[in-house]
Image (cartoon, helix red, strand yellow):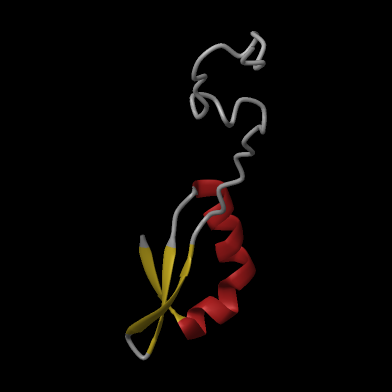
Length: 70
């Protein structure tokens, strides 16, 4: 993680954003020596809805038989 001053960040903003995207590095942006923001790469992995509930449901008893008690 690299540290950069806000004034330098303003000058190189687009260049730094490209660097974060390509190299997957992070920057801490400081103002008067104190950290105020963090520039990090976005996690763009898309999770499929298929199978998202796997192992979350359990069957209790017979699900095929009749529920008639007589």
